Structure formats: C-alpha cells, structure tokens
Amino acid sequence: MRIGVVTFPGSLDDGDAARAARLAGAEAVRLWHGDPDLHGVDAVVLPGGFSYGDYLRCGAIARFAPVMESIIDAARGGLPVLGICNGFQVLCEAHLLPGALTRNQHLHFRNRDQWLKVEATNTAWTNRFTPGQEILIPVKNGEGCFVADQKTLDSLEGEGRVIARYVRGNPNGSQRDIAGITNEAGNVVGIMPHPEHAVEALTGPSLDGLGFFTSVLRALAGATADGQLAGGQQR
Amino acid sequence: MARVVVDVMLKPEILDPQGQAVANALPRLGVTDVSSVRIGRRIEIDFAGEPDLDRAREIADKLLANPVIEDFEIRVEDAAAEVA
Image 1 (cartoon, each protein chain N blue to C red):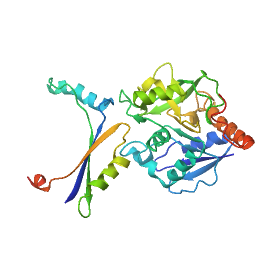
Image 2: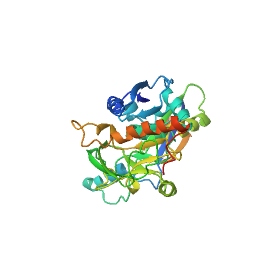
Image 3: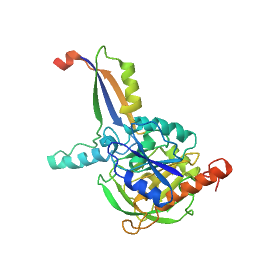
Image 4: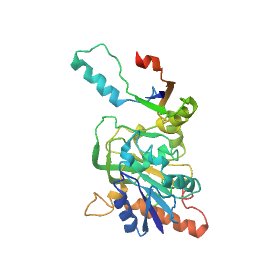
C-alpha cells in the first residue's frame, strides 16, 4: 500500500508523517505541492506545519496548490485523506470538511501531550480504535480552535462524525471539545493533534498515533477484498 | 488608480480573541468606555485597468474570506477621497 505525504512550502511534519506510514507497514510516497500527479497512491496525508507561512488564513493558499486540485477530486471519489493540524485546516478551507480552525481562544500556542477520546471508529483512519478509547498524542497549534455553526455541530454529532474529542482539558477552546471530524463517507478525516508524533517509544508519549495509519491499511485491504472502502461499513 | 478595497470581518457570532485582548488592554491606556473591539482585515486590490467589482467579489469569496467564519464588503476606492 502506498501512502502519499504532501509537502507544501512551510510543511514541517511531512517527514514524520512519512515515517509513521512506513512504521505502519506502508510505502511512503512524497508528493510535491506543485505537481498535480498523485503517482498512484492509495491514500494521502496532508501534514502539519505552516503552509505558505499561514498567510491570509491557515491553509487558505495551500488549498489552491496544484496537488490539492487532484486530491480534492480524488477525495470526492473515495480516496482516504488524513489532514493533521495544518492539513486539517487545508481540508476545511477546501470544503472537504465543514467548519474552520481559528485562533486558540486564549491566544497562546499550545504544545503538550493531549488525551483524546476516540468516538467514530467507522472511518478509513480510525477503524483500529474502539469507541470511547482514550489515546495520548501530542498537540501543538496556535490556530486549532474548531468552530462551526450550531446546526453543523449538531449534524456532526448526530451523524457520528466526531472522530475524537479532547478530554482532561481542551487545549484551544474548540467547540464541544472537538479534536477531529470526518466527512459523510468516512474517507476524509481531519485531526488537530499529531498522531504521527506518537508512533515510537523513543520520541512519542505513546504509540497510539500508529492506529490512524494501520487503520487506513486495513481500510484499503478491505477495499481490495470487496471492491469498496471498508470505511463507513464497520459500525 | 483602479483600486478595490475588501474589508473582511469575522462573523458576529464568531469569537474574536484578538479583539478581546485589545479591549482588555484599553483600560491600561485609561480608556474605560469601550465595550467591544473586533479585528478584521483590509485588503487593497489594484487592477491594471478599470476596477472590476465582480472579479473582486469572486476573489474575495474564493480566497480572501472564508465564508464559514467571515463576511466581507467590497468597494471601489474613491480616488478623490484618497487625495483629500
């Protein structure tokens, strides 16, 4: 299985995301923002960082990169896409996910190990977890406060599209403690904390982040077996 | 000058922590009669030819503002006012 990792100007965590993909057992394929060719990858990770210097709004300019046009089309066709931190912001700006990420309510950059409670496990990126499972992965953002109108928040919760919530403290003021969400089909997931930084005992607070990457491998294996995505079918 | 000005503001229902921080600093200047401060962004677009409000609106809608959290207003800048 080939997991593509995009590098935008200003991406920081592309190397760690590629490493996490390899540790999960995938082949990591580096994708360049200026190249619309997805090189036949089976899934894509949009990594953390400060694409285009976070100018205008986080992710607002990256969303128009040539590679994003291809990813947006492919995501609508079912390609699993995981956006981490800045990648989550890019997915919201691209309207692949609802809502927006805004300045942390307390205005401080937050960098710490964060407990999350996993909720939706029927997505391409969370099927290796159990609902209610608590995981510990690093969070590091200045603009991670998830906002959406009440109707959108209600429908995200009503449709089981919250994939994880902050527990034991909300680091940025996100509405309803939302740390990550998925689209209706379950193939696109955005999460503010960094699973790719929690894949090895030497550098991470846990190995909990690996589950996101092994989940997509299972989803892809299921897709190969039965001709469609496992994500969205396992509830 | 074929200039179009775009003012982008957070929607009223979106919390503006930067504006709150500024409002909270005002008493240190001796200002105590301000109830709220909200911060937005002014963008100036210079067209090579005539100012094109429709294209400016498209630019604002697609890129300059995020309609999920922001509203925008556009106007052709009044050259006479600029001189004054």
